Image (cartoon, rainbow, N blue to C red; front, side):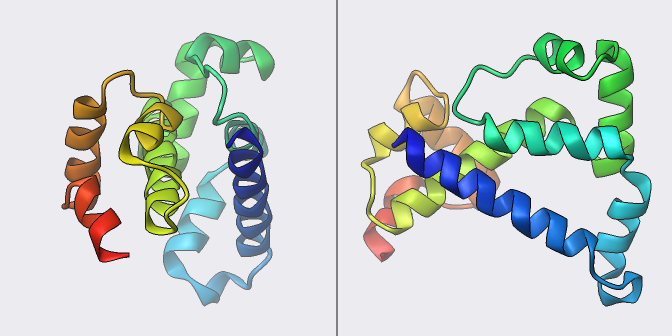
Length: 141
């Protein structure tokens, strides 16, 4: 399970890097995000992607990248228009959704994989982000 998350994180890193290499007129949204994201923030995203299975705190990230928590939060929000914790939560839910679609995990396993201790909290967060509860994703695939 942990290996799958690490592999998927590496894939997302490669995709992120590839998008960054595209011509600026290829994608206006990508261009705007890429332009505003400085190298340190991009490195934070890469770190997050490779450590999604770990306990990621703002303090740990700030220390890892020699920044204050407030500076890290501000720069990340400017670059990606979302909080770091929101990004982490969304990425974990996205990976859980992909695993549910592929039938790799049960809903309870997906909940724990995404960092939720109670499947009901996972279900509520999942439905808020994707518009459907996880059991519908499982039943449709």
